[in-house]
Every structure is written in structure tokens, then in C-alpha cells.
Amino acid sequence: MLFLVRMDVQIPHDLPADKAEEIKAREKAYSQDLQRQGKWQALYRVVGEYANYSVFDVETNDELHTMLSSLPLFPYMKIQVTPLARHPSSIR
Image (cartoon, rainbow, N blue to C red):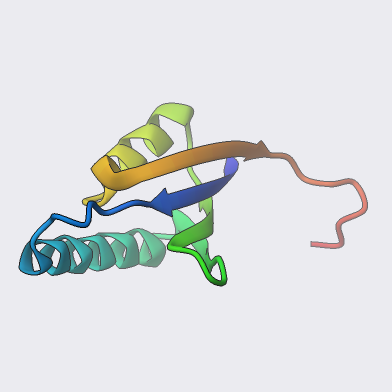
């Protein structure tokens, strides 16, 4: 199942810088692991925002929920999920 996910990150300004950097490092490692597994298929930055659009390929809604809620930055995110279906005009 394919999903388009928009993630807007809102790290509190009063979070100590060293704590924020540690969370971001764990986030990077976790997201790259999911990418290597083929679960997180695409990751695009939104220009001018601390946000991204990502494409996930997972077996179930629950699997996606577990992945997203396991993101180290999850407590600081607003997330929008859009299920995707193959378009009949697509050549891929």
C-alpha cells in the first residue's frame, strides 16, 4: 500500500540544542534504515519549511502508524497521510 505523508516538524524553541541534535541524529538513522528496507521509498524536503513529503510502501495502515509513531521527532510533528492508488495513465 502506498501513502503520501507530509510531516511538519515543530521543535520547541526551549528544547536544549544538544537534545535536539541527539533526536535529529536518531531520526536520520531510523529513516535511513526504513529507506534501505524499501518501506520509505521517497523523501523530499519542502523548500523554505521544516517539512517533508515522503512516500511509504507498507503492508497495512497499522504498519505505517507504527513506523510514524516510532519516529524520534514524532512528538514534534504534525502529520498528514494520503493513501495513493495507481493512476490508469501511469506508464510505471
